[in-house]
Image (cartoon, rainbow, N blue to C red; front, side, top):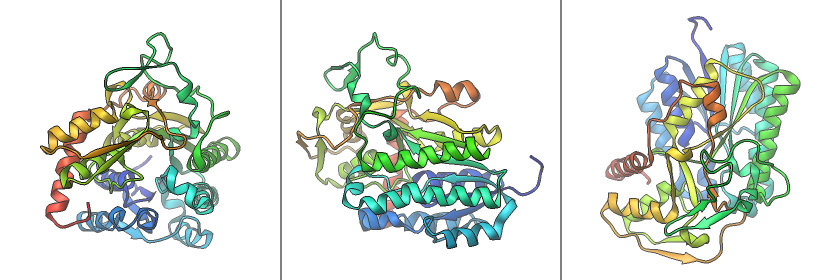
Length: 363
């Protein structure tokens, strides 16, 4: 790649990963085109709107161009890609309907965003910029709840995998099957998009990658009850709002990766891309917690006692224990490493929320 101006299109540009990518690639000197029509507000209500983040990005990055477009619209995407054409070096597809529960309320819209929207973007890439690097933000939910069949032991504050199991040391790798499990409709729509991205790589030769994330987090998250649990948990602690824990005794385990660490991983792939690559990506053994452990951290950092209640019914398709094995990505990109551990993530979320609330922006 020469010294000419590089152009990246980022979908979901006002969301957690999208906005982190806008900042990251703007600071790398690339021209950033953001696509985001704030459907998160439609999904989860005014408190989840990303409008505050769009305004922040436009204030901070003068060369950033934002388009309020719908990725499902062939016409809108065709006009956008026709304008920039072969100038596009990278597409980061971070737009999605991200909730299990919401998907069940409107399966057609969920599928149209997560599957059809991904297909439209892939077609635009194939037609207008076939040499582009196409990175898709997938999810570990494409595996469904098959992880719940792993041999788990109940400890005082968390569920933990049996130490004799091959996933114990590093976490769950990409060999886990996508079949014979409950995915939730969200998991199905994301799996469809994931498979499309792989197929456009294998069949058409596009340089594509699916990053199957665990819990993605950071201070730019517009956390809400149905999505963005660490951010929403901290909001509840800070504002003394009630919080509900669903199932598994509150001992369900998630690995948590900061949005910067994830976007940095995307950058490494962009610099040395492959074809139809699949990577589990998350906090791994380096950064993870149970719900109970996360509540304790929120209380310690905020100085408030969280008012939480328990419902003994887990969300459909929810994982009891998920820790990502990132060995495959590390093997391909040994220079990549984490910058944020669990405590640093939680403290940054707290400071970010405090700053936004002070400015009167939506939490």
